[in-house]
Image (cartoon, rainbow, N blue to C red; front, side):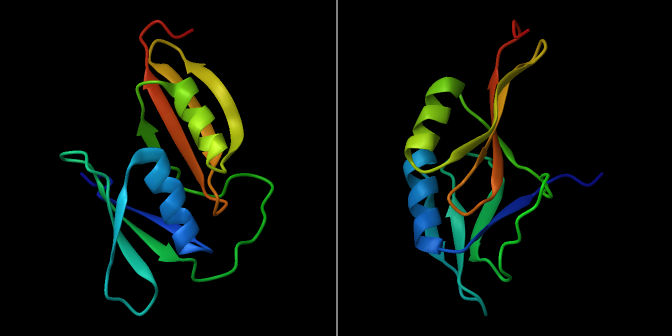
Length: 126
């Protein structure tokens, strides 16, 4: 059965995106030979999905609702990670909310106008 195996982040400014995700999650980036500006992402988590960062191929178009396939990342302290993301230049799209019996989640917009989610497990979440 198909399952996610790779993620990509499109960026208007690859250096700015690398700084944002490097500072926020500790990820590192390695240039990858391609016809476009492209970097492989190392998350430093054993067994984690692999990823890439590339120069956005077309200008970003503003939309009223999310038009994306959002990647959500596990974190151990959601409130602190949201604060850290905002300090690094992110905007809160959907503030922290409970996923009953599973945990807490929030959606943010990175420096490149991409939506991503953060999730903290908590069986007591209501």
